[in-house]
Length: 151
Image 1 (cartoon, helix red, strand yellow):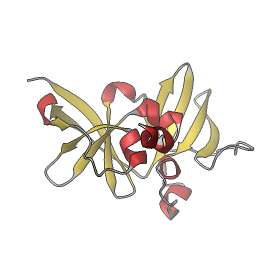
Image 2 (cartoon, rainbow, N blue to C red):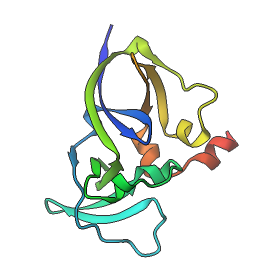
Image 3 (cartoon, rainbow, N blue to C red):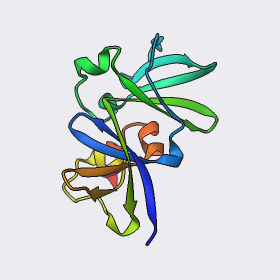
Image 4 (spheres, rainbow, N blue to C red):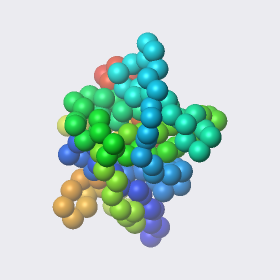
């Protein structure tokens, strides 16, 4: 059986995972500049080692209320690159790297919220929690509730 490695992180009370190969770095966003007329889920832009990074508030994108922790200097971001652009997905907490057998990955449950289902590639049951495997491309693209409802 083949295994895959996922970086785990928390947004709200939910644990998510993203393939290790999709993550460039984990960092603390500092001195973000607001983007005028952007959506509430765009936290701003920042300079990260000479690169301009668009910071995306994962809580807002998933329809969750902002927390005091994500508004403070304690917030973290997962750095990814897509189409030559750099993004920082602001999360609540970084977890561990876990190895999961391909056979343990399951399809999304039918009762998963439409927005969450849109950004999920599937789930995996861990000992004490459900790991939602995040589709980074869809998460960066924005809310898919409309697309999910139309499907």
